[in-house]
Amino acid sequence: MFLLLIEDNIPRHISSFQYAMSLYKPITEYYIIDLVLYKLWELLVPALLTFLAIKYFPRVNAWAHRIEGKNYFDRRLVYDEQRSEFEKQRTNFLRGVADQKEQQKGYKEDIEEQTTDKERWQNEFAELAADNAFVKAMGNAIDSIYYRGGIFNQGAFGKELLDLLLTRQIVVVEFRASEARLKFTQKGEEFAKMFTLKARWD
Image 1 (cartoon, rainbow, N blue to C red):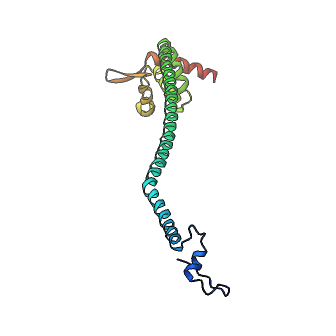
Image 2: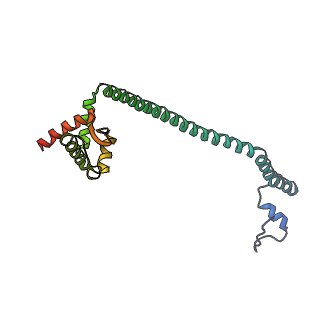
């Protein structure tokens, strides 16, 4: 396709073809040969570029994809390495916690083995001393056992208070001649001593 510029100063004896060819730098002295060469150039260059694109662009794309894949898996590898290191540190931490728990368990068992019944009862009494129901139940039990020979009126004593003492194994109920009587256990006797001593100090 040629663009023809018509001006008044173009000589009339020059044809449009000659004028168009004059816009190109001549290769040979023959217009026809120059035209063929320029046409070949116009066709070969796009054809060559198209051929190169069809043949080598897939290879370039594959090469780029390999680079992208390598970078992706390199990042994954770094992540997996960091994750593995984290899991190792977490395992060591949990192992340390487990060891501490095991040692604590051993120490607690040693303490429990070395703690006498009396010391355990003292600890239990210290916990119960702040409970008003326990204080009232112990007062009723001491009154019934020490001052009434163990005879008690269950209605006046209170079922809940009696159940509290029975559950803690502080008292037992004995039946004598169809009559129920309260009696302190060994633990209950220690509780009674501590209760009386505390009452004196209060």
